[in-house]
Amino acid sequence: MERVIIAPGRYIQGPGTIKNLGQHVSNFGERPLVVVDKGVVGILGETLKQSLHEHVQPLIEIFEGECSKKEISRLQKSAGSNANVVIGVGGGKAIDTAKAVAHFMQIPVVVVPTIAATDAPTSALSVIYTEAGVFEEYLFLPRNPDLVLLDTEVIANAPPRFLASGMGDALATYFEAEACARSGAKSMAGGRTTLAALALARLCYETLLKYGEQAMWAVQNRAVTPALEAVVEANTLLSGIGFESSGLAAAHAIHNGFTALEGTETAYHGEKVAFSTLVQLVLEGRTIEEVEEVIGFCLAIDLPITLRQLGVEIVDPKALTRAAEVAAHPDETIHNMPFKVTASMVKDAILAADAMGRAYLAN
Ligand SMILES: [Zn+2]
Image 1 (cartoon, rainbow, N blue to C red):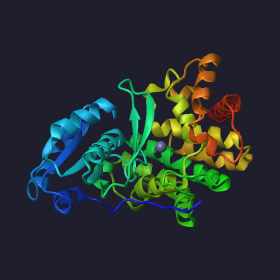
Image 2 (image 1 turned 90 degrees about the vertical axis):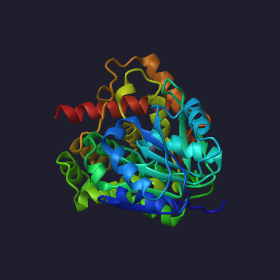
Image 3 (image 1 turned 180 degrees about the vertical axis):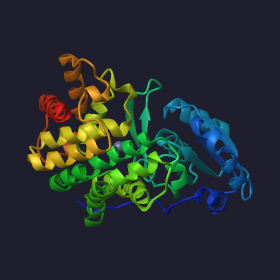
């Protein structure tokens, strides 16, 4: 199999950089459809308008909250044939929606994450959910965003839980990448992993361990520091290229299983992925030292390590079996693991990881 790596056309990160958005967008088109998350309109609306109006004629649309087929076609209709570039401003779902709209309209897309809560921004992938918020499918796009622009001042002013959640998502990257490298799995990029993508995935994990806790102190005080800059890059660029060009494995499949488990609705993607990473480590039979490193990291930045912390008050064995079956669905990335995985293995790993997490919390 060929080795393939893909990445966004351009990645720009820094404090106050949103002021330059209009100028950057004008390189792609003068009539952008701007898909803006409801929550950020009040905070960023004026800065955005000012930056855009200086250089282009934007059509601004408010994102309704779910990256569903219905929302994608609504935005596509509202853009008509006028827009020649799409800008997605907000969280992962607004961005995924903007990417899908641009794809169907066959025009460039500029991504402006206002939180560093997932590694979705850089990828050529949109995750489609039902209108009720249950995972539906991955929409693979022919190319990555043309530009990803992150204003670290904006990220520093977002609730700290988002940054922690982004670290939860990024925490899985190296372990899933390594599993895919061992099994020789085909990644989302359409081939085997490269030394480059694997190195970025490893750097992602190392950066989290080095700067994760410091970055949380910064964001809790709305401060931009080198540690915050490092973690934003790890959450977005390193994890983004790492997962996409190395591949997803058990952790994200288990996450998808959890979306079907009652109680987890209020947990963020990265929070579910953090606990799912722990489940993958158990499933792989990792040593206590390797597991403890991950648990210690989660404890330090308040990421969940038990089902209860994910919102599951009472563990119903039938519901857990159902979640494990979703995780082990034949189409799932769990089959990128270097060994055969069954639903009952997943269920047992969840139970064991949960017991381990409870033991560490009790200490
Ligand atoms: Zn993820």
